[in-house]
Image (cartoon, rainbow, N blue to C red; front, side, top):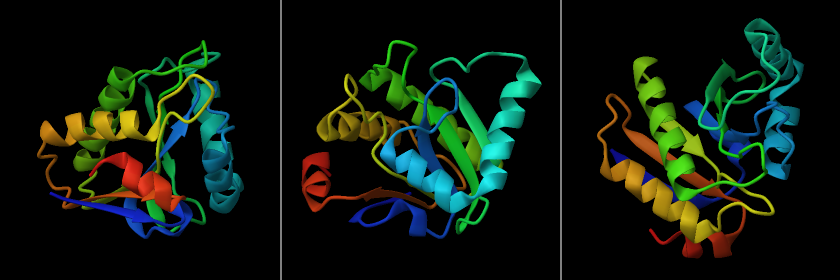
Length: 165
């Protein structure tokens, strides 16, 4: 499996699965998730709301992975990773475990390409270096067949260097 790290716009990635961060309410309220939701269109938001309504839960637990279609994005699927706890924080272990679950699910869909931005952005969340450490742990546990490429797309060039790959 090939790892690609690049600076760019996560919304422009033509991949089988695009991973994005979410809170337990699937509100996609951080800037990156908001921009993904805006570009993905109303169908993505409708699918998220249907997931909540269908489970009769007020929220999804940290570590959950919720799948929707890609909407207007160039991704076949969006996986919404709940990497923020109810207390608005995160850990390396939570992020690593959730990414691992997402990659396993992507493999079940016969995905060959997966892209993700930096996850767990927020006030008490992870630094870029901590996110890189979590991702490295996950990739070391692979392979995640049939995935051929995992692409990390970061908005700032400084984050590319801080990631540590």
